[in-house]
Length: 260
Image (cartoon, rainbow, N blue to C red):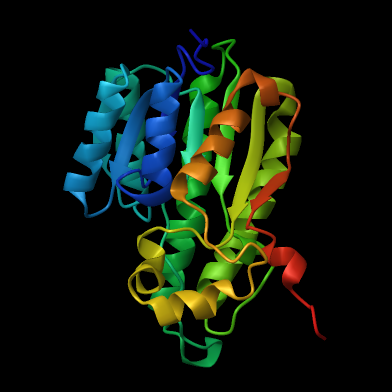
């Protein structure tokens, strides 16, 4: 039998009620990790994730989380510590999509919400995670889920693009700060993935065909394809990979600028 690569690890995976987060939580469990699962609105989705984690033989705790609220992040790490133990893996996956509003028209409140959810929340989760490992003599892993839009801007998406670019630079800065503490920090930048963010493309063949035209592989990723990469980055096989971005986009970023 193949040895589980994450046996004995404790992972916090935010936004694990669906999509990339759900697939990652399940993949971690199948590799032996216990998992803290979070959700914003979809408790049923989170409970389904819990069921699959437990069926894989791992322990789970489900915690509601609006990561724009610092006190809820405090509670997440308290509950994880109490019910599972000290987290050794953190996947900052939860986030909200762009508003689709030009900068000149975007309400301050909407921009503020995007930054608090997509950047401040992961920042605070990283703080809690790093502090929790101090004095524990354990390797730690932080994986921030950014996006190809950390590099590729879109009109009407300043809120999302700025937050994801900031999260990429948080990754790089942390890599300098925590390398000697035995904590690996990297980020995964997915392109188009079949998650609830892309429901219109999943449900409408015309929208689908239009959106995949700029992807050389002519398809979106499945959430499991991102999860498999997260498992690798969390494993000891990746312990010399540090401060880098793993782009998983079917070649999308190679296509940008073609025909110019």
